Length: 120
View (cartoon, one colour):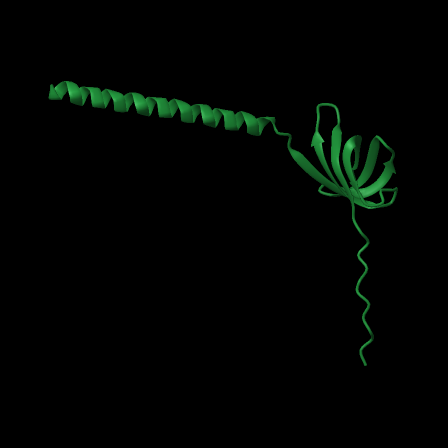
């Protein structure tokens, strides 16, 4: 009787561990699939060459200096600041198969140094 009881306990433990392993594998697979489905956001900084309601073209300052980049602007694109030709902007965007989609366009404020009085 004690052998049957021990065998039953061992079999129950093995089945429990197997069920936990399967659940952990499913959770890991679900997390990996979720991570793969979220779009990757990139950042570019540059001077605005052209802008209208649906398009933004910048002359890039970083990370690829001297290159023009074109972005699609959607109604959902967040626009921060006075966006116009000549403004320096930071663009956060996602790559889609045929184009780059701007998610946030932020105009960099002109940094004015604080007023200092001359030293005597």
